[in-house]
Every structure is written in C-alpha cells, then in structure tokens.
Length: 394
Image (cartoon, rainbow, N blue to C red; front, top):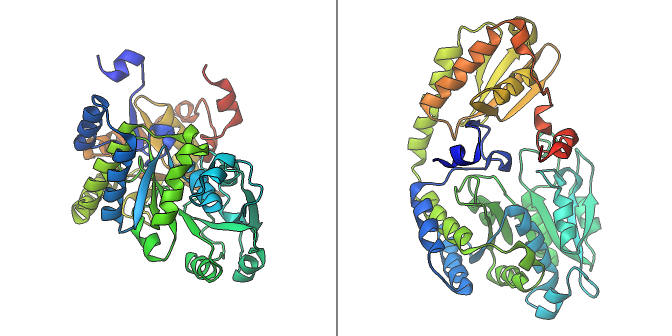
C-alpha cells in the first residue's frame, strides 16, 4: 500500500508553492536516497555537521554554516548566538539574559506571522524585541536611535508578507549601521530562492528553510561568519537542544544543497512557461476569468469578475481546495467587483495543470449551487483560523 492508502491521506495538487501547510517541497530522488542511507547507519553528529558546514560554505560562499530543525528555530538560535557568543556559561544560562546585551531591533513591518510570529521566535531565546517605525514606514533615524549598549542584533525579514508598498530601512542601511556599531545583522530569507544575495549584501548571518526552495527534508539553514556560526552551533548545548535536527535532516539538506547549486535555471524557466501555456490555452475563453502573468515566472494571477463568473476569488480558491483531488492555490484576494486567485506553478507538471484548468472550468461554468464552498474561509487565514485550529484533530 502507498502512504496515502495506508493512512487515508487525500490526494493533493500543489499550486500554492512550498508552505508548511501542504508539506513544503518534494524531495528529489537523490535526496531521498541519501536520507534513506543515513537512516540505516550511525554517525557522529558533530562530524556530520562539520561536513555540512563545508557543503554550505562551498555552495553559498559563506565562511561557515550549520543545519537546524527549521528556519523558525534558526531565528531563535541566531539571536541566542548574538547574545552569548561562544561563551558556554552564557549559553547554558539562556533564556535568562542577565548580564548580556539582549535587545533585537526589528522593523514593525517585519514582525510578520508565518504560522508563528517572528517576534515570538526572538523571545524564545530570552531576547527583548525593540520595534522601530510603523507598519508602513521606518527610517534610518529610527534604527540609529534604537541602538544602545543593550543591542545584540538587528533582524531583517525578507518575505512576501512584508507590505510591498511600505517605505522601510533597507538591508544595506542595516548592514552599514550594524558594521559601524559592531552589531550583527541577521537576515531571515526563509523562502527566498538564493541566500547568496544577502551574504553579498553584508549580512552577518542568513537563515533559510531547507524544505522550501532547496528541496530538503524539514530543516533550516544557517550561513555566514564563522565565529557567529560556531556560536549558533553551540546553542545545541543550550536552548537549541529542544530544536535539534537529526542525521536525516542534516544529510538531506547537504544533498539538496548540492543539487540546488547545480540546477539548470533556463530549463526550469522553459518548464514553467510550458505549464503557463496550458493555463492560457484552456482558460482563455472562460467568461469571467482573465489570466495574467505574475511578478515572477512561477506565478500566474487568475482575475475573477464576480458578476460574470458568478463567484468570488475566495470562493473559487476554497472550492478548488475542497474538491478531490484537493487543489491548493497560493492566495485569493477580493476587491470591489473582482478578485485574484494566485497560482504557483513550481510543483505542477503539465498533466496536473490540465486537471486544475478542468476543475476551474467545471466550477465557473457549472450551476450556481456548485459555487458555494462548505468552508468559505479567507484564504490567507488557513494557517491561523481559530475555528479550524480548535477543531483539530477532528
């Protein structure tokens, strides 16, 4: 029996990208093989992490790196490292930060919810968050005035959840102020396609998800300056013990990183274009729908005219999710008279794209009674809907 059959897991077509809620990315055969092999042997974890450090340094250009259980744990660990350095007594003292610089500067607009809250990940280490600016504006003078002898780090978020219209302090400005004051800058690049751009910009530490773009098992990546990475790794003898990663996560990230470094980007762009062509050909004559290319080659935006299509973008997205197989779009946003369903093409193949198109046509061109989802939840709320969370495990 397959895993789906054995445990009664419903089939799912992923048009949402790599979020945790759908199990993130899918591992390549080479990664699965490496994980299966290491699960059958014993290794010294310090040695394995040392080899992982070498792979991370080679593939990212960082001085050093280590593997964590997730990107969110990497936030807590890097913050802890900024406070303790390699002092083992201080590491064991956390989350009590008495006698240490314990403030982390975070732009208010960067305190996003990714399924958990960024500021909560900081507080887990025992640090105090110092927010600067407002939800749509921060300036360098906010940053300068927040820096005191108690400042341990500046945390900078790179995420699509950050308001794109906000006017905020740039990473380059954070790096310049941090370098002048001797304060490390930590960049959370959880789902970004390439950490190297942030290292080149001068970040002292960059954290990312191993199981999103990179395609590893659930894991987190820390890379950056060697002394800080060492302080991060030493947190395994402190608060990091509760966040430890196993041998399968370490080897899986190593194997996935090596594949990521050798990926054929032009070929991937051609593959995405072919999938986009499937949507264009099948949906071009559907009343009430209009297809637009997204801001990135892996995104499509499906514009929904409420009156002509007979439903909202939110309803369409939820109906896709409630069908069999379940189809998960990336987002759905409605305005006055129209809305947008966003599709991420990276985990789709052409056959699945055809299935998605057929289901969209079935919904939009079908009877009115078929246009009412059972759970018309705001699509961004799937992660944190109180009603959904408090029903679990029923």
